[in-house]
Image (cartoon, rainbow, N blue to C red; front, top):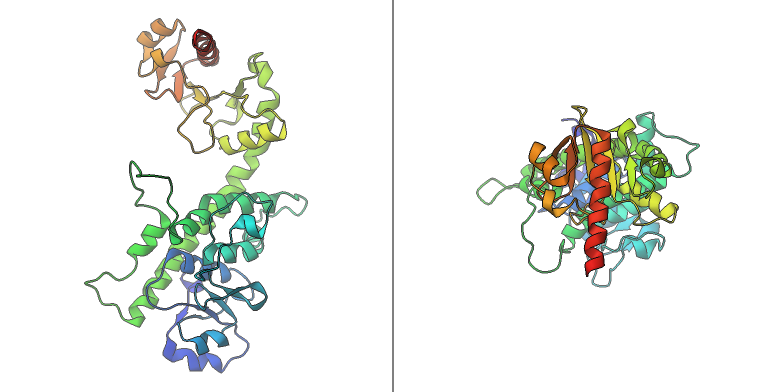
Length: 363
């Protein structure tokens, strides 16, 4: 497996052999049922030079725990000075925000979040250096990637492990393909053999899984997502060349780039939060799209959806109802529309704003 060489777990009865070598640092986590947070915490540690060859000892024996160099998700102690990272204590209530008040994240940390907080920047930089992507002259790169990877990857694992619901009340649907669930599926089932050896093997498979996804996430955010910001920022600066209202940005020169998170950041930097309502760009077939800006990056609620009477219509019917030529479609929810020309997409956005203003004036 791709990450198999990083995932050496050690049976308890082999511990005496390891104790013969005082040069190799030992990582400890609990035995028995594993979860995504302890699996990820161990994987992250093995990305550090001082732990890359470390055996992983899975035990709850206090004497064995005491002899290990670094301990995650077991032992009842959080003390960075002693390399102890458990979060099960009754009085444990640390979030990233409490450890660093400049961070907005207020989900209680799991062992993965603790390890990421203390070592994540070093791990990210190591991966960037391996990929030739580390820019020593960019003083923002590491911190921006640290926050983004926490928000998009680690935070979810922290929340699930600590039993934090994704929303208040009964969710309309459940997500069953998340990483924590897939790690859970690797545990031996009730009607399968569940020896220590089997558990160690499954733990290694889980480390392979979370490790590959973590590397892929770091690679995506460093290679694809992070470089896109400068193009989004330029599009925001040029917004009034698209339309005097300044409510539309044109991303056609860099179609397909991730733009929503960057847009919110740029708006904040330029003190124009909420002003951008639409983004236009070309798709792979060279048709044009007008996409509505959501109220936040992953929201389905829009600042200004395309006009309600256009939604679900296509082609000639849509052009007739909107009185805009060259229309192709408007999605039934109003979050995106398509047209054959740039001018038509701009017209769809502008007319939507005009009609919305008229509706507001009636109220």
